[in-house]
Length: 165
Image 1 (cartoon, one colour):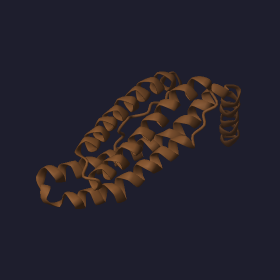
Image 2 (cartoon, helix red, strand yellow; image 1 turned 30 degrees about the vertical axis):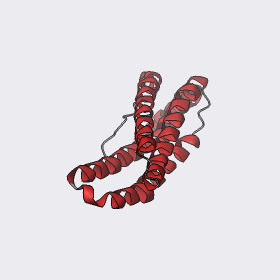
Image 3 (cartoon, one colour; image 1 turned 45 degrees about the horizontal axis):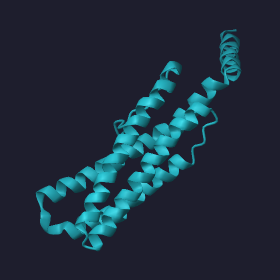
C-alpha cells in the first residue's frame, strides 16, 4: 500500500508541474544553462592559468598564444554555441538570455582577436581585444543578476562561476 501512496504523490507532483508551464520552463532553462555556467568556470580557469604563466615567464609567449588559440578559443566558441542553442519560450527569459549570448559571443571574438593581434604584432589591437573581453565579463555579470531575479522565485539559481566537480 505504501508504494501506491508514493505513486499517487509522484503523480500529483507531476500534475502540478504540468499545470504550471512557467515553472517547467524555468526548470528546463536552468537545466540547460547550469552546465554552460560550469563550462564558463572551466574557460575562465584556463585563461587565468595562461595569464599567470605569462606573469611568471614571459619567454614563452608564443606557446601561451598557441594554447590560447588551440584551447581557449575553441572552448569559448563552444560556450557561445551552447548558449545560442538554448531557446527559452518565456519572453522574459528570452530577453535576459540574449545577454548571455551577447556576452559569450563577445568573449569568443575577443579571444580570437587577441590571437590574431599577437600574430600580426599589433599591440593596440591586442589591448582593444582585452578591453572587449572585460566588457564581455561585465555583460555576463549583468546576465547572472537578471536571470537569477527570474529563477530564484522558483527555487533555482545560476552561479557565474560554479565550483568544478
